[in-house]
Length: 120
Image 1 (cartoon, rainbow, N blue to C red):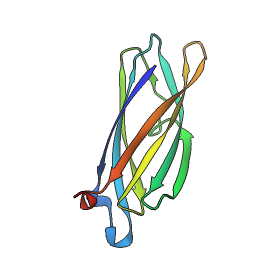
Image 2: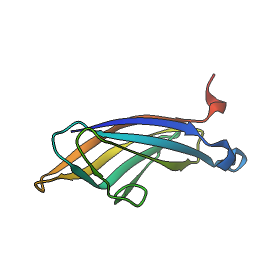
Image 3: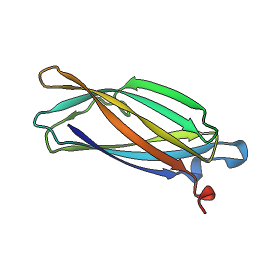
Image 4: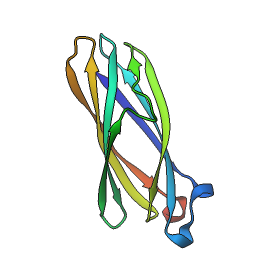
């Protein structure tokens, strides 16, 4: 029902590589390709750093909202992710509900978080 598109970028102004702090910004576009309005209720992220250490984040909605997304509409938001390594990955799930109260899960495909300093 939802199509997910992700773009990520290193945020050097907020990062401190000398202190092993690398901040990434990611923008997600969620497009409702279904036939009814659906609401994004909560999220679950798996964030893995360059050493393979993972942490999980769960929470209500996204960026403080639980948006209703009508058919053929797109909701877009940006957020940040700090890592202690200059590269890592994120993937996860959105938990949603449709107009009839039916619950469904939308997979968020894995995407890379890579500081420009490690790209050759």
